[in-house]
Amino acid sequence: MVFRIQPGRASVLCLFASLAMFASLTPLHAGAQDDDNAKPQQHGRKYKAPPDTSHIEVTVLKGFNKKPIDGAHVVFHPYKDGVDEGSLEVKTHPDGKAIIDVIPTGSKVRIQVIADGFATFADDYQVNEPSREITISMIRPRAQISTYIDNEGKPSQLQPGVQVPIRPKPATSASPPSPSGSSSTSGSSTTPSNSTTSGSSKPQS
Image (cartoon, rainbow, N blue to C red; front, top):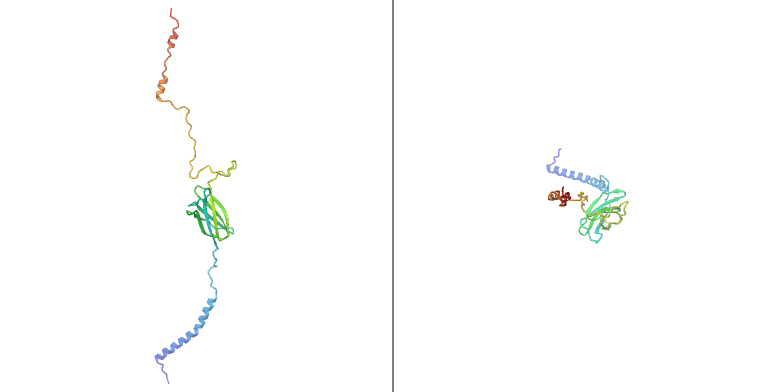
């Protein structure tokens, strides 16, 4: 005896079979996802957090009247653990301040200030705190240090700006040349009047 299955029943049986197979595989897949989430994420290279940085505020003033200097060049040259971190340059604002926030905390910073009409300033600072304020008073140019002359504290003899070298003037003659009219008159001299009378001292015999 042969049983025939109708097309509608065959599709229902296939649907039930697929649902049963999906239900049996779902717990295994969920367990595999849980195992993957439990493992720590691995990067291609080891992540290193950036170092802490300090807020440095430099105020540049004129030494003789304590007024701010606008447009002065402030150069920061940090060293940390004996490693040169490079140099950064910031210009001062009209209030004389130059601010920087990228210097690593614990660095030894050499600060150099260059301003027109003032002597160049340079000094080292150890920055261990998260915020540091530094005030720099600029002075006029000083005379160069010499072995033969004591120039300590003396002002510079050269003024700021481009200097014109002092050249010696060419030597000039002591007596200026005489005019052309005076040479003709000086050449013609008249004989004195007594020259003719002195020749005839007595009459001829």
